Length: 486
Image (cartoon, rainbow, N blue to C red; front, side, top):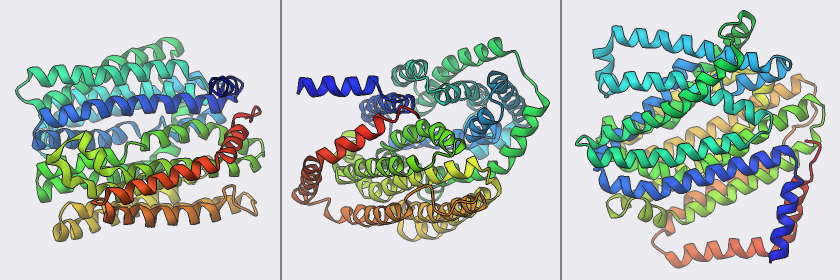
């Protein structure tokens, strides 16, 4: 066993840059989720379901306002800029920070002019919204810096900053909640204070290092690419957050809190998938740019299989996950986990499709797909939450993400045809068959939650399959680790 561990360590040391980056970003994600898993049970027991609902509503609005204020430029727009301006990457980063700062300052001015009605609409006090806007102004500084580190496959500083965030966030949160009377608002304020501190330091350092606030050509390029994507990003965020906002309005803040715990449990592994996708996006970009697309298919199949297996195990363990996370007062939330976890898997799949779409700048088609998906989610939520309660939100979300994934597969296929590809870069037959089986069996698992023997037997069978195919899995991992030309 010791020799095998040494062997894997040696292979990791000799692995390609994207593999090392993916590994460490995934480790960060696991640490992040472990800390959350440790602290969520504490917060759910200290806070009432209504107070936890307040925090979940804040998170929803934070995600929405972040896109409006920053245009999500630090995402794929930034990756495209790294390819387009290879000799001016640092200036491009600083200029993008200047652009997002300018937009956020305008948003602050608008809020100050209409603070009372906007505060009532959002459901948060004016002072918290102002602090939130300061945090939003500083966020792109951190995200742009982290994206640049990922693009260069540099992970050490990102790992260090991530660990600082995931350790300080719950510690400060527990301190604030412990001493405050308004515990829901205290939890919100603790998140903002920690992120402003860390993001602010990196934000100032970016300007100090690069000294470029405005560049006409950079701003024009980014705005032309980002503005059509705002409906896309906003629709994606609404698809993620609309459930809790509508449940709060239709069923009460306490039900939004219960649903939020289930959603958090179901999305435990989404951040792992996102880290993998973020780490491999620059690798895919560079392979396409070099005309070396044959290697992509096998790697993506392996990643999809890995993410699917982890999510299915989470579905099997839903009763235990909720019991640990929140206790008996949230027990009814277990039936939300299967559809939402299936949604988390589909998010990973269609994000891989979007990687190709972003590379070929298919922003208009992506916008149409995203807006249509958000509209369908709102309509189905409005109908089925009223009819069946907050449980229905999980299934309407799954339905919309399924439509999302299908639509993005067509957009990606059309983009590839325009570029002269006769075949897909990805193995679409495998993705279709595996995803279909995953969703069917994942949803059916909710029928056997009361039967622990059946659930654990399924997990045992999965474990046995892994043991039987360990050599194939080992060879697959070795194949990825040995891609030194990535």
